Length: 149
Image (tube, rainbow, N blue to C red; front, side):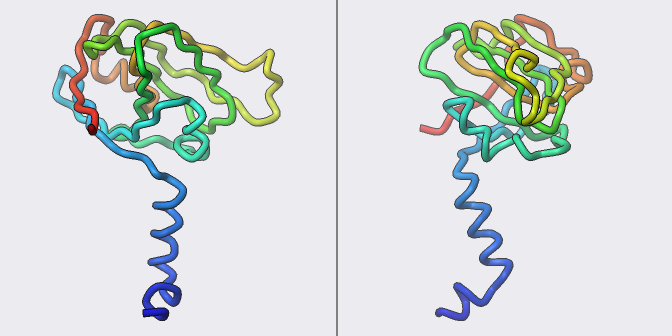
């Protein structure tokens, strides 16, 4: 048993990935039928082990922030390595505000220079840059997803 658990490098690598992530996943389906596999996070701080160190986000992956209620949310795009499209959704899953290609920033960027995006939402989808343009997303469009219980 000891050899199986501690003598296998692939097993240890998998164990580390599972321990660091800790995310649940769902699928967000766009109006044109395209599906994005999304990691769920209930606070922006959880991105520290999510998208922060990703250099390129696949077109079919992203992160969905879930808040308790619809309200104004501010996102500081700091400490990320990728450009993102950010899509704010109301409780019915309809797009209220969207931002294309929010620029990445780095750890040494002064807080006063960090780009900030904000919107009224209960859900915020971070998707690969170009998602909005590629799929012709517009405010009012409804995105379909089911959250785990």
